[in-house]
Image (cartoon, rainbow, N blue to C red; front, side, top):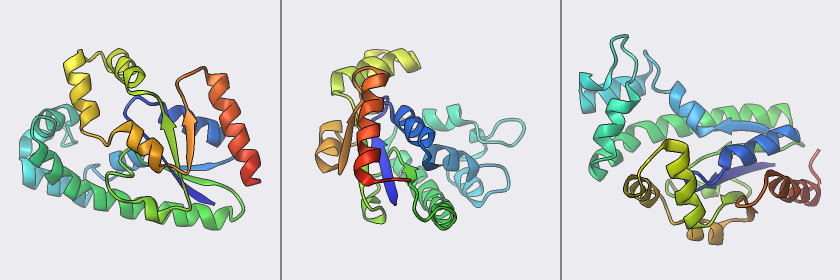
Length: 198
């Protein structure tokens, strides 16, 4: 079984992914793949430099994420331009890895952890979508604490993504991650048992 896992920023997607892996799922993490496709020598990095200039590279010739972030998070058009470069490269590598994992373990669970799954209209690629959910107020509080953002910056980052309630509505399975780790684990156990996963 191949599913997509998503949620909002600071909704605890990584925690849910970890709980699934602990039970035997194979994970393909979009954030990890996103780091791979912008390594020196990768075509996506060359395209980013071509679009945004040498200022987005550090002295070693690697991507300076902070410098790039300062450019794209201040201008939605520039963020769209960046996504147009990185998303196809990420998607291609993820699908290749998912196929490998599914062949390796045909009766198991393969999880694709994709923060912008709905925003990039990838839901049709998966047998179902699981959403790591927390109410917006908790999302804001956790993001401010985790990233040491002020409230205004945290709200701006949240607004760059689809509303968490809309993601919850579209999901096949919702894991309410606003309580304790044990409460989240119980929900994952129930999902695992209902799906008859091995």
